[in-house]
Image (cartoon, rainbow, N blue to C red; front, side, top):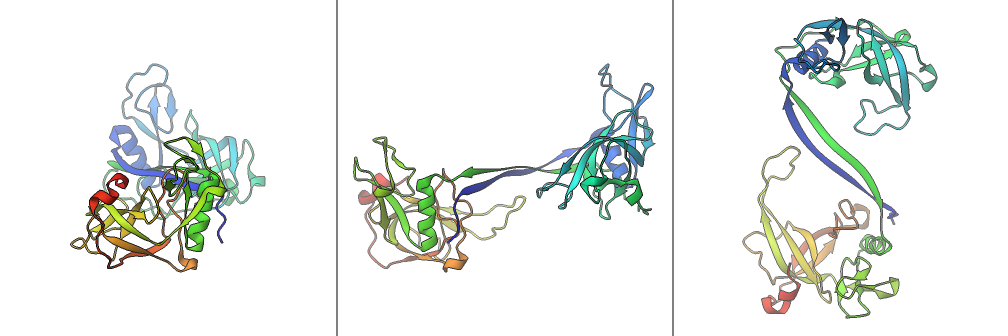
Length: 329
């Protein structure tokens, strides 16, 4: 059985922006294998800015090529990179004073080991084989590990930059939610019966939300596979970044027999949009134990992740609305 200790979240969204008269040439230079700075009085700023950092006056787009060599000022070793890092093996982030520039650039150094890294070490800019006009087109290596590259110039100016913003974090499962997940792993629905009202909640938050009475493992109850559809939405997918759905499908709330709160976010893939109706009697068919997926289940939202293979109509007569009206969201 899987161990349910923590849940992982990813808050992520893509966006794009125009690059403008300063960032655009800088990114175009990276795509074409060059590092560009901008003149600001007697200084050269790299990465280039649109304004003088001292006077805040707008700078003319007077660019100058810098590097490709530079000197490490300070650094930190990334022993366990995440999927958002520029490398999936250990590397360093460093402040690098490029030859010909008066301000340092912070960037990745791909070194063979942490023992190689030191202040004052010389590094050289290297470029990826596939470049798109982004800051990740370039990286640095120790001078002793550098080699010659032939960089093909791209077409046109880089006018749009693409970005994917994401935040990853983890949270420990509450004891009640952990037992709910362990039940799903075994192929059973675990709810909790309030000692104050007798109402059954699934998934429970560990307390009666009406009477504010805590519930313990002694209040756990096992519920049947059968239930009633109390409400539903027919979802017609729209195109967006990362969209995998292409056909309309149903997302419903199912009130399990003996429960007082419905299971929400249930995907109904084998019931047609013409057949679906509130009051329909259905039965959960669990996936084989080895195929059960618990992604998307956390301490706040219930659902059943990828544990249930499908909900099948039982063939029983529909339940009248007035019977389940108090349980419909």
